Length: 460
Length: 68
Image 1 (cartoon, rainbow over the protein chains, first blue to last red):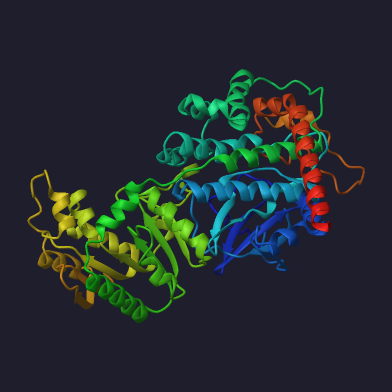
Image 2 (cartoon, each protein chain N blue to C red):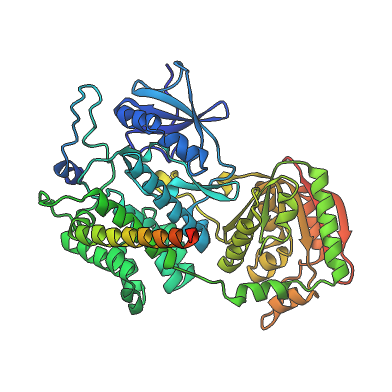
């Protein structure tokens, strides 16, 4: 039996771990988890959750050659197309992940089980929808006990959602620094006073923070009262009602920006759609990363061709609108995510290996960089060679749009500042990119001076 | 803080080999979080009972109305 190499994010739970072998994704179930796994399978909960699309499908495999000495079962797990993290989700994605977790807990209780953790990292997006991915999160429910995952649920879901909804949506980025969720005292201090007027937030966040502060690390006294199943159901129901009442509507700033950015004539816009479609057709199937995707207008050209498409944008409002559209249309190949390309998700967590950087989750087969170069080159002072290097390490194929300096959008970026961008020209752009890419096609768009390129990475 | 959970429960079943591991809950549940739940237990179950009863009454009325 060979000892498998564990996933760098799978070491906390002694119930088992995840590893990869020969391109497959496996989960070892340890002997100590046996009664819980057996109950999960025999109660029908595993099938129910999987069949209803709430839990990622797994299948038992017989392979004595793999696994450690603690192995009870070996499961082959379906792989999600792209691993994403809570700090990359928009408000509705985090809210859907929270409601999914509560749905799973409710069904688990009905089957005599409970979730022993409620981490937001146990949720991923597959086929456009949130899905629970940790098969070993369930344990047999023991009457009289409170929910052990209550603290984690409130830190991972309730606190960031409340802050995004009632203070500022950008506070969702705090999850990037606080890998085990937002400390409740921090959330309580950040939230406006009016949040105390909401019963759910008063109870699960403000009072919860006070209890945490009061009890600190004190050894717990033996409980004198029981937490009945009715209390547990009441807790889940109360958390669900609290989460459901949290709303966030994207302001017009992001949307208006989107409309403003589209300074094309109808002819140029149609031409851009046609040319990008042709370029994608030439590339064939694969994974597309649309960098600076806005609300996903061009991401949908790739997703519509069956490509797994990740639509990154800096603006939480754009990502929110894009995600709502994914849900409304029932799209299965498009995943909108928040990403600041000038400061992308870093590796984080234990030894910097628990959560992967954006780069580690690549490369893509094709990168779309439409109406992006001027933002990176002018607004972020990034030399064209650096942008070409970034594109080179991000994907094999590149569909990129050059926006000239006299374009209204580029002129807007130059307003009120000195033009120090002597190298920013179509010639400078082509020279910088030709060092890293071969240019297959080059299509000027009518009426605007912009040019679309199809490039393929040169191996160095 | 593992002791928090194990002190709250003696999770050994009577079935000799299928013992529940008392420390299976590997997370620190947080003493404050556990204490709060115990304090609000009555409130939660009471609210849940009232809500469920209301839903039952409402569905009974709507079923009766549909029949008539």
